[in-house]
Length: 378
View 1 (cartoon, rainbow, N blue to C red):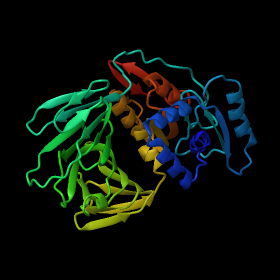
View 2: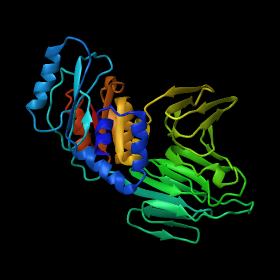
View 3: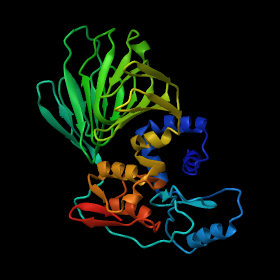
View 4: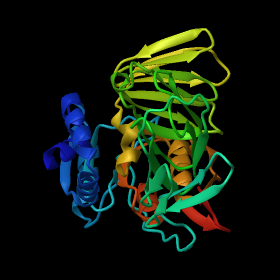
């Protein structure tokens, strides 16, 4: 598995190997081992295009040899570069163009900027709110929590009246829940899920991602007399038979992303529908009935569930949105031109904000400064 993790980080892993790694990561103990390797791996990979720009290559390589710390590789969307060297060490990696130099570390000393943790609010059918947090247990007649996961008792039910609960994860939080049918749902920061406390035997099992991001591992319909499973969002309906998929539908985003890992799902919006196969993503714009589908590297979309953030050619604005939710801090772009610059990188979610921002700032193309509880990007 160490070999597969190294291949993942160096972008040389096959789809079959990714599937093997995902299965292995379903064990929480393995997730810890994975995070440790991402954090401490020391693998050097040379990735280069077949063009004659040796000087550019040597400049980057010599910079790496002269330093005893991670070199972060960065790519702007308008720069064509001949070679890139990816170095994985304690704090991950980012892409750097060949003309960039290390510009020194920063320290974000505001103690209010905490790494995200397991926490959520459970809202019962009578409106009672229960705060769930790490290392704090909660037990009732039909549900219990160990501080990071909520589990409903599995039982068949023929009662027609359905009571709903809400699980709300704030900024700076994450949580997961096992529904009464055995379906597992992981909720990312700033997300809310509505679901029944029990399902009626033989009827469609329906939940709603009110907003945010969630990863679903659905209990197969064959275990429930053929009952289908549906997930509603504000702009679409996802129908499944038994599968694993990720939905991202944040309140302030104009786009809903549905990414399929295993099985099959049907995306329905208005009079349109699309059937996804594994390693495909459906994109739905809020003001458009069109459903566009493309083949993608699903790992970059679901790595958050495994304790890692993985970005590949992502606009800096999107990366900052992700960090903003996880660290519960606001980022302000003073230099608007930086919003669409493309970055790639991997880092452990347990790292503090200074480590992550240093990875980006050390490219020499962007800088961060803490002002009045907000981080300015220049």
